Amino acid sequence: MDKKDLIDMPEPLSSFDAAARIELVLVSHTNVGKTTLARTLLGQDVGEVRDAAHVTVTAESHRLLETAEGDALILWDTPGLGDSARLVRRLAGASNPIGWFLSQVWDRWTDRPFYLSQQAMRAAREHADVVLYPVNATEAPDGAGYLEAELQLLAWFDRPVLVLLNQTGLAAERGAGAAELRRWREHLRDRPGVQGVLALDAFTRSWVQEQALFDALGAHVAEDKQPGWQRLQAAWQRRNVARFSDSMRAIAAQLVAAAQIEQAVEPAAEGKAGLLSRLAGAGGGDARRERGQLALQRQLEAGRAETTRELLRLHGLLGRAEHPFLKRLDRADLVSRAPLDPVQAGLGGAIASGAATGLVADAAAGGLTLGTGALLGALAGAVAFVAGARGYNQARGVASETLRLGDAALRALLQDALLKYLAVAHFGRGRGDYEHEALPQAWVDEARVRVEGQAAQLDAVFGALRIGDLETEAARSQLESIAARLALDLLAWLYPQADVARLRREVELRPARVDGPNT
Image (cartoon, rainbow, N blue to C red):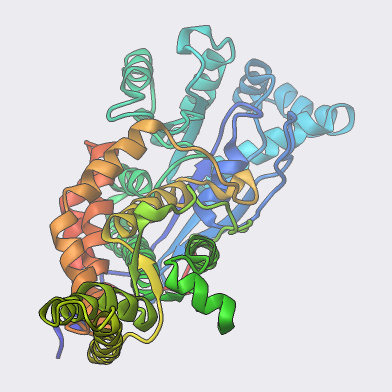
């Protein structure tokens, strides 16, 4: 049995190890991005997302994850909190007759949204194992007037609370956002129920951050549900690792295809005009190579769009995959492989060899041949060089001129693909359809340094693939391994607190395929 199969086999349930149902409840101030975060975590377009207050009016539960053993992770989306102070008073006073009447009768008929908020909070409290409380990271905690009342509400839940810093944006550099995290942690220290503060942006989060959330949640799940939680966490991680591996496989396939492209250059024109231009060393070569260069670029753009489509599919996103190539190819990016032109070779041979031999014969005859020796020698040299050029081309297997990408251009293509992966992996589904955006320059610079650091290994794979010393599948496997190592290095650079070493081990153990965001 394969080692990988042993890792994937679930442990049998014991009589004391029943399937667990673990429920997470999202609670936040209105219009902070709570439903957007729910969509991002679920990989589904649940609820309604609008730039308005109180869009969600009821508590809704969604199945976030399940295991073969029957464990289920449920995510609740609740109405956004508006008049939090009034809501806390209603909920706290509902146990006395007057409070019950106001909550269940008066509010139902006079202020239905407020009534629905109370019902949603009660439902959430009844089901919650852990409460997730997203906040706007761009606000100072001591400047958010609603915060104190909502902290009282969170204490009313009497459940562990994890605060999630939302709307942090993309990390422009390593460690970015650390100041905001410290500020919120300091402000919420020793608050009843608050067990931790994490960065998890609904709009630009990544699976590495999600794994940090799962690690934090595990410390607050009831002991009797821990075995089920561990199975759920392992299933979540397997899914993320499989998606990552498949993303790297798509990038490697793009590189292999790009390295194997040989774009033919149009042959020179035939006939008298073509012959004269070839004798003159022209033949419209620049124009013909320009057309070949554009055709090669179109092939690269098609491959890049296909890779983007696959990355979007794997991450459960929609959007346009086509995007202008990062830069137009120029001659420095290309390598030309062209046959020797027999006509030009013959002309050169006539001048360099045959004519010289004929002139020697003319001189020996005292010039009495009147140049006939030079002419005959030139013809003999031309015939010899034409035959030699044709034999040389046949030996090389080159019948016409072709263009291909140079090694530096292929490395730039890998850098582009890794940045595309980071962009897709950080695009929260709640934002809507995927859009191409400029990434922080620090990301671009770091990716360039990382890729260039692997130049020797990459160039060796490209070279062996071109000459047939490495089969296509073997080259794809090697490039996938290099791309995965580089991508994990970039994630470790972006998230220095993440346990990327563990992720690296799991990627090496289980390079599985996935069909979508929640399989």
